[in-house]
Length: 459
Image (cartoon, rainbow, N blue to C red; front, side):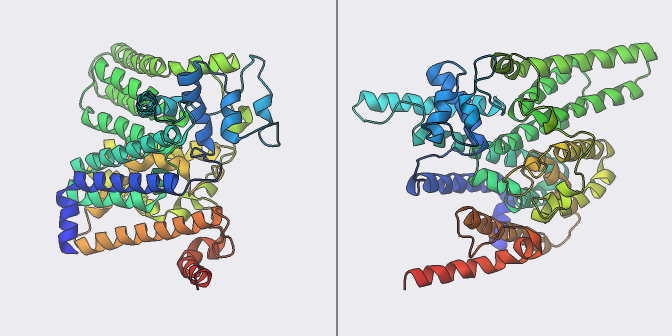
């Protein structure tokens, strides 16, 4: 065991890459060896991301009716998806999801398209339609790659402050012991895997350039924040980083108040313009589909800014952040030693976490629909890794750290098994993770029930 722990700490890049490969192999095995009856791979929210990509590449338009009909296997309007047959005043079908994931998936999707075209030229009969399993799976593999990169960047951020040991174990604890695992393995076609990467990248650049105050730095941060917002609109709250820097710049300079205000204003305007420039694809899509450049596609009532579920989003047994993934609660405790280490960094982390907390709590469905835990916090993974590293760095015994990580990962895997069995219809052996028994104790019983069911079936 000691040798394994040493290998993990001495070769963090290999460790993270190896886990990413295992996740990709597991995902590929599941979607190709055990396909769903209808052949679909992208489901739920992922359908809306995917139709952007398929329609733009193959139809060269934003008319999604045929894409939705094909993916949902529709022959006529049915309850729940009747909107597919109800065009907006612009003549387009609505799409309430961001366009960013489609842009990020495009390289691998186009590579698959080229490979299929080449195979067909050699006589292999595989559909060149953008819907076939290889096309859909390319989105999932792109998501796993993004999550793996996000884990690596999270490690780099933490290692800079707390060394390889604390950083790698904290990275593994948050990645595999909380909701990011589900969206790196089971549902990598959701936007959360990508947000784990984009948010970590923004914070890494901010950390590495925090001693600079030039306009170029603010332009770079603005562009990256615009990219993060393309993936998930809520990530626009990352704009708090350059705003905090501008406030610090204003307070720290010795020039006149007017000159300080001018310098800060220029930098913030440059940040906003760079973010807006990168965000333009979303604005263009909204203008085409809805006839408006800026809006909340789900409707104004989607966000309840004055009535956020601040306690429930953290502590509810129905997808609460801390109740489903307690390792995150432990990570938050690490904000105290982080504050003692560097108040500027800690202040920025706290502001970002508070903004994420309030924004996620203000969503009408703060529980995030059908989700594994509080999935809208997956984008905060790098912040949790940094805070947890601050805590782990104070633990002298390696065995204690490894035990915490192993416990977090084991509990998360057991809960994931229970959750998946429930969703697959095996509700007689796997209750929904809700309530004291369903969320806390059932995960320990489910494996034995599953084994018993298998033995009875094969006896």
